[in-house]
Image (cartoon, rainbow, N blue to C red; front, side):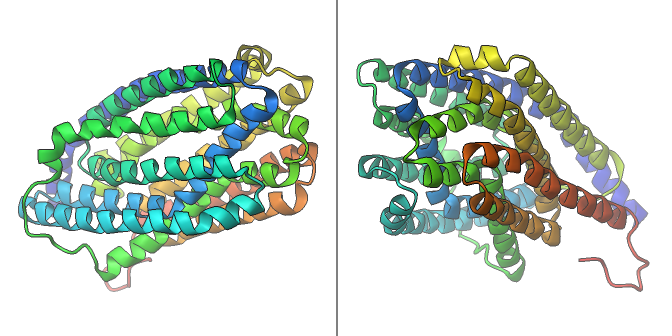
Length: 433
């Protein structure tokens, strides 16, 4: 047993040395992407009136809701490809890659059909104008097909290529967003997100790597079905913790444009805090999916990356709180109401970012109970907001308290699991789930 562990750790060392390097490089590229996205918000913030600006933000949140089925599969495919990529079994990797590509292709078509069926009832319930609902559907189609290829790239660890795509996408978004100066409508701001996703066409340059000929190996197994289900719960929790408040605000305040505008404006910068450092979690997820044993250099490097994520996230929150007035003025949407909401929003997104990190660790480690708990906490968080958040002031103060409770529950459960897996039972006892 000790010889097997030593051999595995020896094989891990080159990847461990590259882990922090990959995370830092990918994150550095994402800093440019985040800055570009902020610039886009500034452009549309100055060109659109508060009502139109708020509609852009809530519609993009609606896009993520319609894209949720596709996101459920993305983490599963990334995990499985990464796992076999690390195993060194090239023949099985090629077969599994071909099988996953076929599965994702069919799933993408199914997700697009499902989005089309849900478009009318959901847009009516959340009071989205018809033209924006159809624009959202177009973005959903682009998002699904982009996720189809990105999940394969993440599984293969193509972080440099993904960074290049991210940089190109933000450049396209900025170029299209400039049209709001000529046509100051929310529709233009939403379509800019569809235009930016054309950056995924760059992957055609690497189509030979993505379409290697091999006999497809079906990924379907009892373990894969279980992981797909758990990844679905994770995606649900992720969405409702990060974007659920937009749905509540659109439903409650659609007829109160000033209140909706102040609430949405406060969330623009805070909501992007976890996204700015998200690539660190992408690298952590891929690495831990490849090697999830709980001792040695691999674990230490993963904990370092997790700690780096928490520190950078905390620094982002501190900077946003210090420069909140400046940020809102740069955005062109400063109001005393928005400035007052920015503090609670920042703490809410900090709790979400930390919860997301723990949940991704659990998902990659196949700690199914924690991942399912994350999904349940996310859904519970949204239900609390929906039931209690009847005014912007109440909603914005319920958010950090509820998100903090969710994080506390998840953190305690994660610590217990870490202790259990660091101290496995004797050989004659069954393993922990």
